[in-house]
Structure formats: C-alpha cells, structure tokens
Length: 60
Image 1 (cartoon, rainbow, N blue to C red):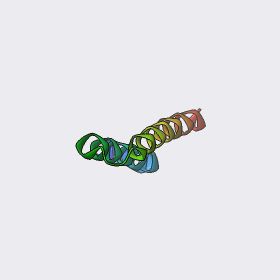
Image 2 (image 1 turned 120 degrees about the vertical axis):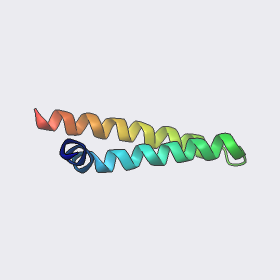
Image 3 (image 1 turned 45 degrees about the vertical axis):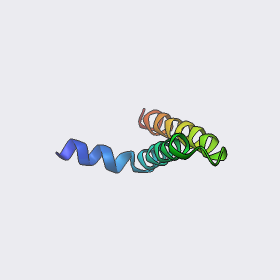
Image 4 (image 1 turned 60 degrees about the vertical axis):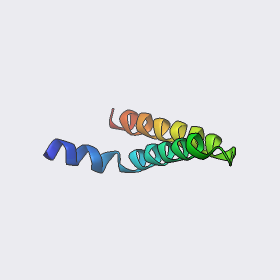
C-alpha cells in the first residue's frame, strides 16, 4: 500500500488532469450539446501525459 500512496503523491496533479479529461470525454459522448468538451478532454489528456513524462524525466 505504501508504494501506491507514494505513486499517488508523486503523480497527483497528473492523475487529476487525466480524471478531468475522462470526465470531459464522458460528458461529450453522453450529451454532445457542447462541442468544446471534446477539445477540453484532448487538452487535459495531453497535459496530463506531458506532466507524467516531465515528472519521470525529472527523477533521472
């Protein structure tokens, strides 16, 4: 459990960004009223992935 807690602590901002992107995608595909939700989902998914890469590269 300690490894999981350390992982969540280290990558917390990136994980929240990915959760936000999932929420935007779900809202877009369920309602399709607002087209900007898909763009927001793509933006936050990309930003979360870049953040994970940045944190991994910072360690080395």
